[in-house]
View 1 (cartoon, one colour):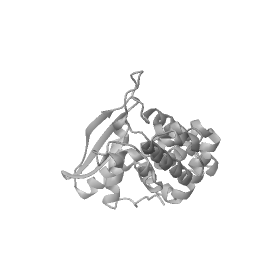
View 2 (view 1 turned 120 degrees about the horizontal axis):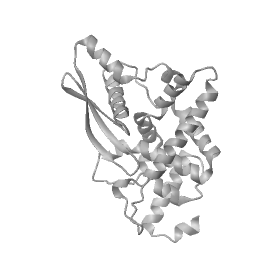
View 3 (view 1 turned 60 degrees about the horizontal axis):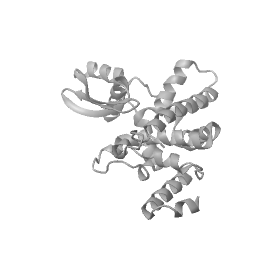
Length: 248
C-alpha cells in the first residue's frame, strides 16, 4: 500500500492518504482495494469520460450501496424487534435510510472531507453526502464482503448514531401530517417538483413545500414521493409539528 502510494503524483498521494485516514476513522479498517474508495468519493459533477466512452463516478456504487445498506438495516431490525410486523420494520428502516437522515449522518461522520465534486456549486455538497455514504457502503461490500460491511453499518452507523426509541415514536408520513396541520390551521399547503436531474441509474427529484404561498423547505429523493416526503419532513420540524429527529 505504501509502495503503491509512492508511485503516484504528490497531489494524488495526499488525496489517497486522506481517504485512507478517513476510512480508518469512520470504518475502523484500512482498505484493500483503494480504487473502489476513490470511485466511491467521486461525484458525477467532475467525472471524466474514459476510453470506453463511460463517465466513471460513484453512481454505480451508490446503487449497490443503497441495496446493501437496506439489507443490513433490515437484518438488524428483524433481529432487534422479533415480535414486530412487516409494516413496522419497513417504516423504521425507511426513517433510518431516508435521504435527509443519510445526509445528516454522512456530514456527522466526516464524509464531506473526502467527497470529490464540483466546488463551484457550493450547495451540491449538502445534497450528495448521503449518496456518497451509500457509495462507500457499496465499496466496503465489494472490498471486504457482506459480513464486514454489515458490521460497519450496524456498529459504526446505526448503534452509535440513531436513537431507535425516538425513531419509533415519530410518524413517517410527513406529507399527510403536514396537510392535516394545514387544514387545522386554515393554511394552504402546496408541493411543487422544481427540478428533475437525470443520472445514469436513476433520477434525482427536488421538491419544495409552500405554506400559505411562503416557501418553507426543499426536499430531495430518487422519486417524486420521496422528495415530497423529505420536504414535508423538514417543514414539520421547522414548524414544530413533530419532534426533531437528530443523528446523535
